[in-house]
Every structure is written in C-alpha cells, then in structure tokens.
Length: 211
Image 1 (cartoon, rainbow, N blue to C red):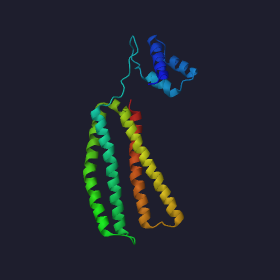
Image 2: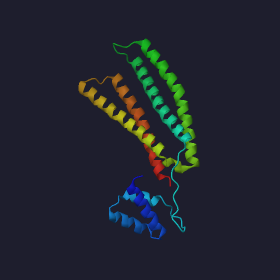
Image 3: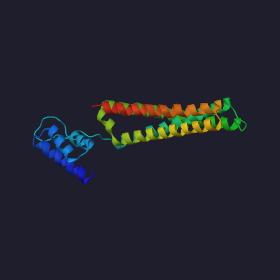
C-alpha cells in the first residue's frame, strides 16, 4: 500500500470515527480530486454497522493451500485444453490428409494427447469442484487477488489465441487457402478459446454480484 493510500485510509477512518456521514466523506474526497474507485475502496474497507468506532470489513484471504489448488486448477485447464485441441487436430488431419500426411506420426500424437487428457481433465474437474465448494462456504474468498490474477491471465491467453486464430483465418482467406481441413482447425481453436473466455468472464461477473 502506497503512502497516498495510507493517507486516504487514515482520513476515512478518522472521518467515520467522528460520525461524519459516508456521503459527506465521499463528496469531500471527490471534490479534493480523488478517483471514484479509490474513494469507494477506502469507504468499503469499513463496514456500515453501527458502532463506536469504524468496523473493518473482512478482506478476501487465501491460504497457501487454496493458492495451491488454484495453481493446479489453471495448470490442468491449460494442459487439458491443449490436449483436446491437439487431439481434434489429429482427427482432422486423419480425416483430411494432405501430401505430407504420415499416419504413424499422427497415431503417436493421438496416443500422447489422449494420455494427457485422461490425466489432466479429471484433476481439473475435481479441483474446480473443490474450489467451488470453498467459495460456497465462504463467498468472500471469491475476491482473492490470487484467484482474480489467475483468472485474468486465463482470459488474456484465451483472447490472444482468439486474435491469432482470426489473423490466421484472414491470412488464409487472402491467400486462397480456405480448405475444409484449414477451416476445421480454425473453428477448433475458436471454439476452445471462446469457451474458456466465456466461462471465466461469466465467473468474474458472477463474483461481482456476490455481496
């Protein structure tokens, strides 16, 4: 926390302890040039319960054990999506082979992708279920900085793949390379990246609705 944030937090605490209404504190800070988000965050640090002194609002806390589960969750997510995408590509290549197609290489790749998917997908589903149970018991943990950072990283990676996928599509269109094999691969990437992006974007919006 910076010195300016310390000053803001101290000011809000002292103002509330003197019985000054939140609306007046908010108006004074905004008039002084503080950003709305900073003001709301400073006021949100204290509960609106009636007491002799300002009562701190519980802050999201994540233990080392929970951080471990989040890291496992997102790592297995990436591996499972990669395995599923690779497996889809292998089947597409088998169904629509080109001149450089070699069955032996594709069959080995399919076995490897299946092995990766069989191991990582159950771990991802189990970890997701476990984390959701933790959030159900203690919804405030949804505001964990670790969880939000990893979620936004997942969104960033998904958007990067979507952008790259559409660039590849336009490149193929300009070069006249729109074969069925090519289009199916582009659609596979769009579907997987879009699913990850949509799910975790919805997850963030759901967290924002949690009081």
